[in-house]
Length: 293
Length: 321
Image 1: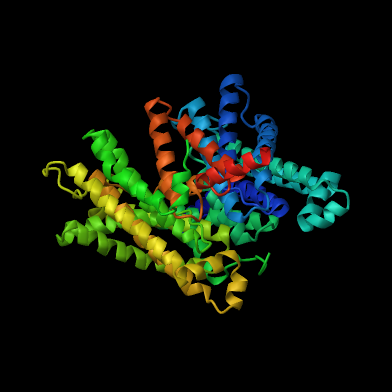
Image 2: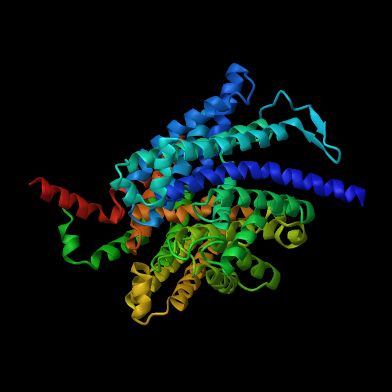
């Protein structure tokens, strides 16, 4: 019985850890959806760019990879703004299928630019704390995973403070609630689109840095599956709802690791889609979704 | 170039295309590389047209590789295990796939665009997982796949050429089928649902059976294309469910012209020629970038695709004068 409990605790811990990556991705997606009402299927490419920026700077400078968050976040803000300006603004309001199709083009461009620069071999970096594990009574946990959870929490608190305590954050929330109304109040909604897209991309980039630091391997094509799962999460948790993204992210992380443990690793990717499809059969607008937009 | 003689008689453009398709392999001679490119092009014309047919009902699928792959697996398994001729196995496999296609469609008909895209993408991942799980390995061969009988056995002289004409007939047949369906009442109902589902409902059209019908037909033809592809290569593996295979028909249809019959044909020909050309230049990664840029540019500047290019140029000239 004792051994069982340890395994369950281990699976739970892994679930929370992989949930952190999903939470950061899904929060970004949800923020962008709330303001612009678009869905960027290429969101996972920002995650991948985050890992490669971390990788590149780590090789070049040898800094502690956690410090490199300070580089990957601002860089991804800039990349996000460029992508929004060039690819998404021209098609805003021209039909929802177009957003999906533009994302597909973006996926091809970003993946292969990275593959062109760094080749498409699997890469990995080593965290300075990789040998340190802590004894939490029931289970031994790597220090890196605890730091990753803490960084995720700090980023989310930072985002909350930004959205609620600053003028720009308030303007973003206003745009998300009522675009026309915000425009009438003198808010430059197109600028808000750009800032929001930048922040969303930066959260994905931060997730990428954390992905790399945790010692997981990455290649230019690694972003698609996490992004699609993040998208499943925001459907589960409700489009535009950030608390929903956090709960959904944890749920998918836990279910996935539970399934990998009970059914075998091959089911890890499929199980979150099965969950999504079951939810959508019961409620076609998502768990907490509104009936019509 | 003066193309006005074509525009005067609308019918002649498809006819000219078919004549070119008929004589092309003879002009190129028996060069195996060109024949392979042409065969794959035809297979993807069938596939892209089938994907495009689903968008006529307003449903954009991101996981058509599920049907493409199922067509390949079902047809080859039926041919190998039951020992029936490949052509019957292909039709049976496509029938089986379209049953599953309708079942998948049943989960999709009530969903909005992004949700539908997600769910179809998810089904491709789920079906790939089912194929590779260890319990099914004795049948599917897991990640390694298995050898598949060729459409035309290599022992027959000129097998590639015969294969080309077989696939050409199937391609023309499926495009004619789509043409017939779109001109029929069903096609009108699909257009009404695509443009405004609420209004379609108000005028007495129940969208559900029509959307399911579109799913059934689209998955049937997609499965035939998938079966033809694996029969062409003589080999199948779970990579057939990959994201790339789902995305190609989308890229072809959009660059050619979404929602037109000629679009997928034009798009497939132009993009695959571009693809092969860039490949010949050794631009492994750059060709993806070129195609991605082309896709985004088409969506932004030429939303009706390459088939609308002559009209767009004409309008531009008119505005200039």
